[in-house]
Amino acid sequence: MGNRLKYLTTVLAVLLGALLWTSTDSSHAGWLIQPDRFHASPHGEMGCLECHADVAEQERHPNPDNTKQTRAERFDPQRCAECHEEVVAELMDNNRHRGRKLSDFQKEGYKRCYTCHDPHHLIKRTESDIEFEAGKPRHTQCAACHGKQDKLPQPSAEEQKCWDCHTAPLAQTGPKRREQITRFCFTCHGPKRDAAIKSAPIVDKGQMQPNGHGGLDCLECHEKAAGYGHADQEHTKCTKCHEVRHDEKTAGGDAHLRVSCEACHLDGVQAVKTGNGNIVHQRIKTTGVSKVHNMLFKEGSGDEESCRRCHSQGNKVGAAAHVLPPKSILCMPCHTATFSAGDTVSIVTLLLFIAAFIMTMTLWASGASGGIGAILAGAAGAVFSARLPKIIRALIMEGLLQKSLFARDPRRWAIHALIFWPFMIRFNLGIFTLIMSLWNTECPYTWALIDKNHPFTAFVFDATGALVILGVVLAVVRRMGKDKAETVEGLPGQDRIALGLLSGVVILGFMLEGMRIAMTGWPEGSQFAFIGYAFSQIVGGSPGAYAYAWYLHAAVWGAFVVYMPFSRMFHIIMAPVNAAVNAAKKEHHH
Image 1 (cartoon, one colour):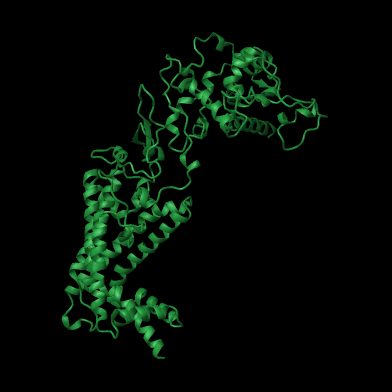
Image 2: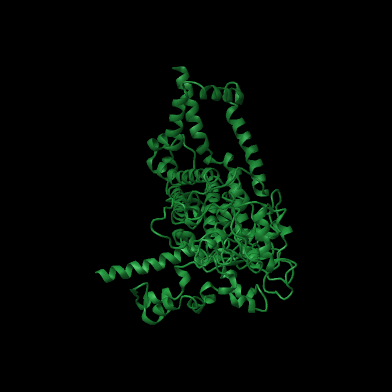
């Protein structure tokens, strides 16, 4: 039991050492050294070339080819053995370290001293009677043993050459830090670099001035750039500073959930699709100055042309061939949309609907005393009176629950509910999601509701659409088998045109969903959109066809909206209005 405990403790120590190193801040990375910590370390009295003699022998320093190597590839155990011969010999020959027996697994971990020992930032062991302030790093408490000094000892002229480049900036922000980091990085990436350096892209810092990044230094976006594995480093995500994601109006909401910011906003790159379906950027190599830092889509501009890197015929990232407009206010009954109408279909539909609605309401109000003006005045008066609770109750019971229809004909009520309630579910879910996307952008539930491939959202959308189709089919079947004598008096008859347009909208929606799923490579979670997923196996995905199908879907919905005021289905709007008016009148007479 004791040996197992020692074994586990040792393994955890090795892993913890590696974790602490890999999670170190960029200012502590391999090529940048903190002078105060180094001065307090056991190596602080040594010269740089005592450990890095090979640097003096190199033809060129820095050598960009070396930056591609990992720390493990660059590490030479013999370098430590030159001074720590007994320790290394004990480790390598006897499988022992600090008096403890090591297993083969542990020995592999200990082969790389830096896993647990940072050679530049170790702290000297001190006598046990030295009192240090708890909670503060020891390298900041030199006065516990030494006389207080205002600055560190100056390095020799030879060492100063190393420190000029390899000193970590003491300032966290500001011009001095930017100047120091820029000088360090531009040794290889600057326009005036050594002509023999050809593998590193050239960066013009002037490109960063107009895009809002002119006040940043390189390490704020490239946090791990000052360390080995330089070529394969991951850049800091843009959301570190830019917390607010684009809304539906700016970038199509769910359409760009799997697209990295850089794929759209960096110049000199191309968008590529990864194995997990995400869209990321890939730098286009050039012999001249890299365009990567010349940001696109700057404040107040709309560079639609850059959208063409994805939105083009035959693209390989699963995007529509055309740049589609954001979902407008007319899409709100089914989708998370915006309070806008910028495309031709939406503008024409909205204007025609307003004209048709005004015409219908004028005719409806012509029989009322005082006309439309009296009705509006009465409605305004009812809202600010004791009648309001009665009116709200009537809207809920008649408008939402259809109480009177249920009392007259439960079967027709059921069919009506199959069509009406799915729209209510989708509308309320869309409004809630829109509010959340504007109010709490970083909430994960917000983006789960926006993501069409999230299991919940995918299933709800397809289930509600299926209920609408079921309601339409049952309505048609019931009408075909119903005798005129059985028609319920006072209720409007069936409107085949409205039902046809409504069915077309839903079916086209399923087809669009199937095309999207196929174009984007059947992403994880899309199978929960069970009808759209089935369509994806049939219709496939074509970037060009998708755009035309999108506009056809919008046009059919627009035709339904415009036709609505003249259709027999207009009672969906008017029934709750009548109920509210009647409730107001009854209360008034009472």
